Image (tube, rainbow, N blue to C red; front, side):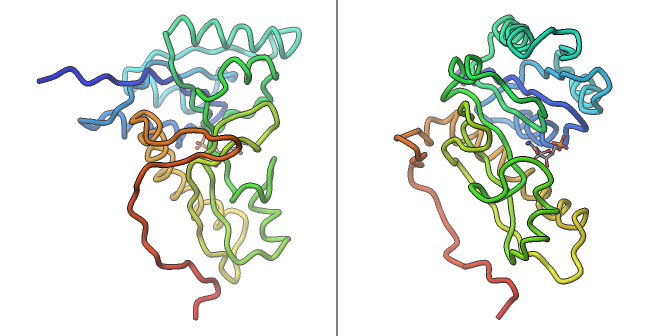
Length: 219
Ligand code: GAR
């Protein structure tokens, strides 16, 4: 069988790691163009670490509290990524702001999943804010990371309806199910060289699209 060149991916987490798990599961499938070579957490008690270890993936804890400042923490992060020969970084519920130096170094080689349809609802508490704003459609975004938080070029998005009676928890669960679909799909596009940055946008080579609109409330 010809050797398939798989991109070496490092995943950064801070918590339960369900998006990380979706990437690990995708990468375990034959023909998937990425290998998850390390999972790094800034918290020793992140639930995702256990899941990564169960999957036989090397894990690293870099406790941000053990570092005097963000630059020192990011330097340790960078060293761990280099040590694992990581080519592409996936932020998966990684809840630390990164320094401009770190994001510049990994520019074009670091992606993030955000639980909202960017550019709406950057930052935290996206589901609560979507409910407060009364939007009828919400969702999630995979994007390249740039120094400004939740702003970089958008690779893929998925939309879900906001339903009457939704709570933040119900809405979060509906969005999370889509996160688990689009994160592995977006990573595949990048590793196959089918998504590239042009200016502020990501251009994606031919893809199939369902020309069916999501309309909420339904008509
Ligand atoms: C996910 O919903 C992810 O989109 C979000 O945190 C959750 C992590 O869940 N990320 C952010 O809010 C980043 N600012 P997970 O640990 O189960 O993947």
